[in-house]
Length: 175
Image (cartoon, rainbow, N blue to C red; front, side):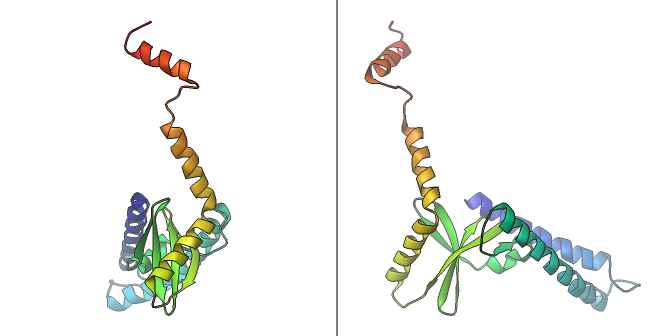
C-alpha cells in the first residue's frame, strides 16, 4: 500500500513541475518570460488542468465503478497533510479532518477515492470504532478475498493425510 502512496506523491510532484515548466517555457504573451507572463500562463494552465481533472475524475469513476469523487495526481498536493489510518485486515488508508467531519480515502496509484465520512467527537475511541465499522462495511468483499487468499497460501498442497505422508517420505528420499 505504501508503494501506491509513493507513486501517487511522485506523480503529484512531477505534474506540478510539468505545469511550472510549461508556464515558464510557453508564456501566453510574447516576449521574454517574466513574472507576469509566468503567472498569467499559470492561471490559464490551471484552468485547463481543472478541466482535465474533471475528465480524469470522470474516467476514474467509470473505470473503477466508484460513486464518490476522487483526488487525482493533478491536485494531489492537497493530500500531503492527510493522516494515515492503519487497519490490520486491509492496510493503510488516509484521512482528512475538515470542520466536524473526518473523510477517509483509499489510496490508488494515481488517485485517492473517498470511501466515507464520519462525524468527529471529542471521544477518539468512538471515532476509531466508527471508522473501523465503516471500513468493514465498505470493504467487506476485499476482506473476504484476503481471507480466502491467506487460507490458500497456508495450504501445504496435500489433499489428504495419506498423500501428505507419502509426499514427506518422497522429499526425504524414501520410496
